[in-house]
Length: 142
Image (cartoon, rainbow, N blue to C red; front, side, top):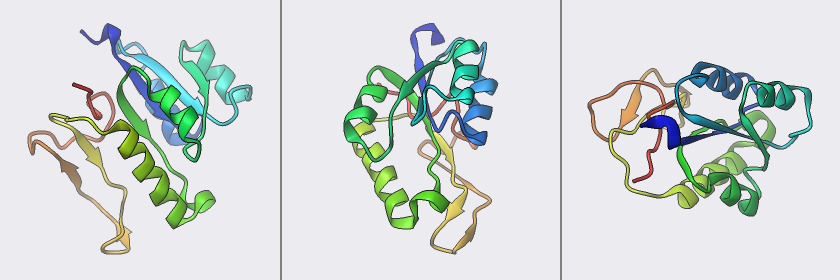
């Protein structure tokens, strides 16, 4: 059933995104990696693993729309140190707006909880059934 499903990995050439791509390798999902530097060494390594590497940027709505086209699920990494808090928040909201669809059993690890200004050790889930981080079950399109 997962053969026709594409997971978009935003930040695929970074440490977290790259680890997700490697973890999902051979899972039956088609993997698409979004990067600003598709000609880079890390992007080339992902392409050799069978990841469809596409150029895009979280600040560029047009490239984000193209990358999301046909995606069943999304794993996204934003870089607060590079973007700053306000821009990172805008990137997340843009992604949510472009990706907004009803989801079931969607579960995401929240690495940072701004309400407490500290690391969060919990997950949030729409169904309450799963406490796993966002990976293969992330934001299924229905």
